[in-house]
Amino acid sequence: MPLVLYNTLTRRKEPFQPVREGKVGMYVCGVTVYDKSHLGHAKSAINFDLIVRYLRYRGYEVNHVTNFTDVDDKIIQRAKELSIDPLALSKSMIDDYFRSMDTLKVGRATKYPKATETIDDIVGMVKGLVDKGMAYESNGSVYFSVRKAEDYGKLSGQTLDQMVAGARVDPSEDKRDPMDFAVWKAAKPGEVAWGSPWGKGRPGWHIECSAMCLKHIGETVDIHGGGTDLIFPHHENEILQSEALTGKQFARYWMHNGMLTIDEEKMSKSLKNFFLIDEVLAMYSPQVIRFFVLNANYRHPLEYNSSSLEDSKRALETLQNSYDETKAYLGRARGEDDAEQMCSDARSRFMEKMDDDFNSRDAVAVMYDLSREVNRLRAEGRLSRKGAENVIGLFDEFNGLFDVLVSEGQRNIVSEGVADLDGEGLESLLAKEELPDADVDMLVRARQDARKRKDFAAADRIRDALAARGIDIQDTRDGAVWKRK
RNA sequence: GCCGGGGUGACAGAGAGGCCAUGUGGCGGACUGCAGAUCCGCAGACAGGAGUUCAAAUCUCCUUCCCGGCCCCA
View 1 (cartoon, rainbow, N blue to C red):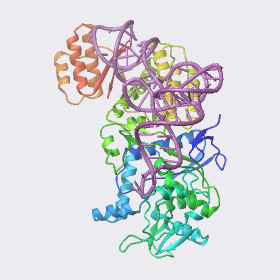
View 2: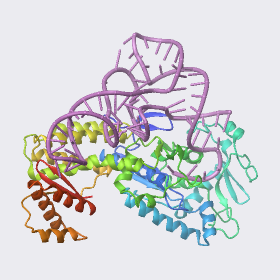
View 3: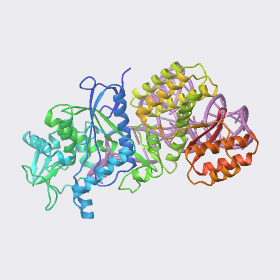
View 4: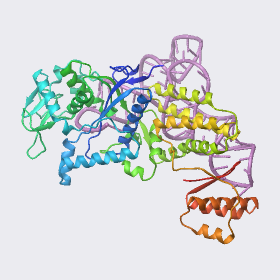
């Protein structure tokens, strides 16, 4: 069964066939680091990280490159406002990006090249374009000549004449055609700049990605990704300049993630409707945020509102409970069912969904099915210890891709036996601020005793006291199970 | 204006010709001292209008509304 993915270039799903068997060169456009990252950037990173993880799960060797645009107009302007060095600003924002993404469990790319570290390659590329007559120098800047390019609009479906008609292009520059774009920008006095055959300057935005693809992956990348907002003009221009230079197809598959929206509008800095990753992490766990993102198709816009993470949190609890309960069940397994068939069915359905353009939403639905089935087997006492191990193993396997379940730190503890505690001991435990596990265990047992005596007031008092410290008790057929929330 | 993508139950969101999405929430039942968790069941949907087809949420056409892009942007 082949892996199929949606290719923006052809606007349809296609079987995935990399240039070199078993190997994938993947380039994903990264961020321009002039400010801290927001939830929309997190969506993009999580979406593409899942794609990388799944490709590896499928056995591909993936070379994943994501860049940092660490010098551009916005960075220079912001640095000026803050009276700091622009490269110091971008450096600190890159640190922030890594901090956020690490917390969100976004896997690291193979390489994170920066524009400022690729200047030589960029200059070489610009030179090559000028030599070929595809680009021209004008007042220290170099522009790509769009009229000379064949098949303009390959990716976006735009034609040049349409563009010029409705465009808000700036005609005041030194361009021969208003649609020409800068591949090298002449520096204004005092700006950060690098030497070049055309004088001091810095790279145009689009050229750095072309140069990095060429340098770190090759003339043809298998998968080129980014947000839908980059399709035009960024990716269109990357294709033009790269193919003009190499004569080879630049990217086989173009994948674009849908925007995160608020009130159906794109989350963005300019609309001031964004939430920083840090702000959201202060309220919700990385797992909840990941689940929110992965519980939807990467390609479509995803609506964020005040309740969306709360909903995700609740929905995820169902899966986490099933996982935790199955682990807790290991110690008291009774039953015959090894769940072999159930697990292999679930795995193949899961892969079938992921093979279909990384349909994580449907893959999540498979996890819910698995969880319901295992819950039933446990409740009916039909699951064997081996069966529980199989299911836990499968949850772990899925979680290796999604990373939405917490495997440690959230233990379910069954408390059995009678509490060795007198009234005074009980009161002193109830008064404690911090309760180590042994104390919790003692209180849970005391509550069990009280329930047996039908002293429900005392039992509820203990439950309330534990709840106030974030400890949750559940009475089950097999005794009381508690966990820290 | 032009180029893309969409409008699915209370909400979030899959699906792309025939079969169930799924989750949260709601309702009913089981279990329970209560609660929670869990299980079983129920309700509720495909923007509007034509057409193609034995069969359409899924294909075609029209209308309408929304979003993204056309300066920067994941």
